[in-house]
Image (cartoon, rainbow, N blue to C red):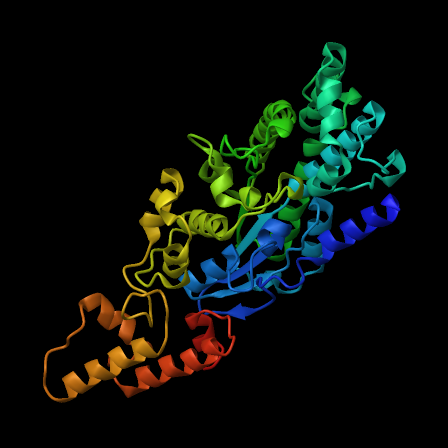
Length: 431
């Protein structure tokens, strides 16, 4: 029975991203740069709701460009490499963004630890070693262990010592490189899989498009949580795993920094620097621990978009979806300082179409435009501020008139009947 449940769980995890509103090939937001994204569930937008936006969409909206997103939940670097080899529009890309490598580490680690828990007799009732898949996710691992049995086992000093030794070996298998004198004893997952595949990705991209800018994201530590969140029975396990996570992440970042031909989006610093607030940028604390929801939430995708936009170096007075996403965040008063500084560096001074500043682009904005048009038509001074005048001139012809109001009403009709595209994308795709 547990084998069946395990298979169902795996299938559910794989399929659950299908309904996520994420970027697909050739989303158009204007005539600017072409962005192509490859990678895993982070880039795909896994766990976002249908009304939320992944970072590729936010970036494309901000620069008024196009985005093609080929990321897929569960993909390892070998899968991403295969996707890059199969993609036909790389030659037209101005920017290529890659988020890959975390799944290589996650799948290897979860498989290793489940086998360890099996030997310790700490699998949940009904599960056996035969139920352990080759590439389990962390959430699968959490469902398959009996934390109470593990806690009881670790209360024995000898068992705790054995466990620590195994966790050390796991860390070595992930992080050791061929510079270590005994490297042949270890699997060297990061060096031989993640970095080797990443270097091949870069070579493939450069062969097709030598002028494309290639941005690779590093990874963050999801176990930076608020102290009162973790239940007592999980604290010992998390305390043992957290240093291993840090070591693995440090090694990955160090090795990634040596890869030539790329620019690095330092997501690690934005998510986990200072007091440790990865919890703010993920869905971890919004679900039971066993769900192990480590993917970026809307705040996380905004932070990644901001980081990459700062690398691209483009400053746009029209903040568009970037500004609207920030203003709609829950708990934006808690937005961590390191990431907030980067946001403020590029945040726009207005949002095209959002004249009244209420984070919605709707009939009220159209009314503002018509009122302004009426005032100007009768020789009165423009009642709008300079920035709101820019927001009101949605067709960019230098005038604020009925044509702008009509465009706003068209978008309002679209969004009020379930349309999810941003205002810029709606305009670009309805020209």
